[in-house]
Amino acid sequence: MSNIPEDYKYTKTHEWVKLEEDGSILVGISDHAQEALGELVFVETPDTGIEVVSGDSVAVVESVKSASDIYTPITGEIIAANEDLEATPELVNEDAYERGWIFRIQPAHMSELDELLSAEEYQAQLDEEDS
Amino acid sequence: MLIFEHSHTGRYSTAQAPHDVAETAIPKHLQRTERAGLPEVSELQAVRHYTRLSQKNFSIDTQFYPLGSCTMKYNPRACNSLAMLPEFLSRHPLAPVSHGQGFMQCMYELQEMLEDVTGMAGVTLTPMAGAQGEFAGVAMITAYHKARGDTERTQIIVPDAAHGTNPATAIMCGCEVIEIPTMKDGDVDFDALKKVVGPKTAGIMLTNPSTLGVFERRIKEIAALVHDAGGLLYYDGANLNAILGQVRPGDMGFDVIHMNLHKTFSTPHGGGGPGSGAVGVSKRLLPFMPIPFIKKNKEEGEQQYDWVTEKELPLTIGRLSAFMGNAGVNLRAYVYARMLGKEGMQRVAEFATLNANYLMKRLADAGFDLAFPERRATHEFIVTLKKQAKELNVNAMDFAKALLDEGFHAPTTYFPLLVPECLLIEPTETEAKEELDLFVDAMVNVLRNSEKDSAHVKAAPYTLPVRRLDDVRAAKQLDVRYQKGVA
Image (cartoon, rainbow over all chains, first blue to last red; front, side, top):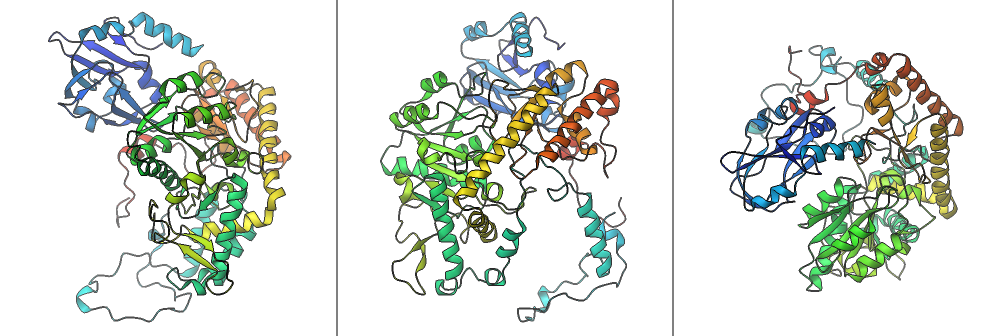
């Protein structure tokens, strides 16, 4: 059973989203996603300072099995990327929801958060995929 | 043991062939001051070393090799020996055309045969590999739109089941990739396609049969939809083996196709060796074909076969390499096509699909889950080991490794990504029924062993020169240099 924290939001494409106190948003991939990919060997993080629209492919995670695009669930400006992942991409496997964050975005419309999946809804999607 | 470790200072062998070029004095300042770090071994040591290495390999000459999507068929020896005739080997690519009329005739006839079997208006043999064929194909599509002043068409539609080279090709050609989903039965999601097709559509890239091992049933509707919107259709020929001589991509409505001649037309391949990604086009793309290719003049004689260059094809997308593709691979394809003839080509597809469907049925009967149980297989099919991974903790990779101990090359694992724990199995037309039965026995054996002792299966292989490789370390810290005295 994969770990799905209650206070995060999720996407159908297995990203997680966390609203920080300063109003910025952290994005990473879910525990289920990291487990399905296997140990990561490379993470391509986005450039900071770029404006992105929700649904844009902004990062890439690569394991020995496959390379997958990471889509931003939120429109806004990328204000930081997790530079630790360059040397230690396996942080995503070890700690998907904290140290394995991929990028930080300053959202243009907070309302986009409401459109994402809750932990419960994400779990339901995983159950459906599994059936 | 590396060949360097056999080395003994001062040991050497004499040259095996006379020099065919004159020795030139190398200026003193360009000469090396130390001896090159080459292994110093006798001829016999070199022979044994490489013979042993070759024996450690899995190969089509020794084992069934059902690597899905790769078409690891037997390549008749005649293709190789005829392509190696000294008259072909010693032809210089810069020699005047009058010196190479025989070679050029063969290549011209290969172009014609490929046009015929794919239903396209023109074929060029110049791409050096499948990926370059794809590049040429999409470059022609964008050149076509540009030439018409239709500059807004920048999107290439790619189904999510496509080979990774498809979106990569679109990006290389400066296009934007629009991905569309696949439905549960393996066909492209037609409604999703309808939504994204429009004035920005440059084209769609389709593999048919798809990477899921099923034939795209609504291909004519897809072609009409994309054409009506002003886009073109690209046929990825990765799975051409399934339809060779049966249906023609040109008749399905495709505007451009690349063929992996090294796969479908018989060159030993894998490991990144030379390939040929010949490209066929419909009438409207003829002016954009990559050069050079070969034309046949009416007058017989020393110039009858000649190169088509930018002089008569000013809108060409240009050259992809110095000369016309990989001559050796194209020659093998020519010999293969000549040996098969038109009827033989039809039998390729018939037996490739018969073998795949037989194997699929037998594996299903033996208790394996098919990814698309309601669909007929094309030349390949997918088994999903989701159940085994969940219940027995033995996944597709474990199965693949255990099959090596059984004496079979593993099928393709974890591709396509859409199907969890999948084995993509392509037996090809060149395997006998007995071999397919042995493969079923091996699969059943691994399944029984997994039920009895999954830990044992998870540690396979046991009989090979190396056990499980550290894939992650190989990807992150690859270091294959030999340094004297360093293990």
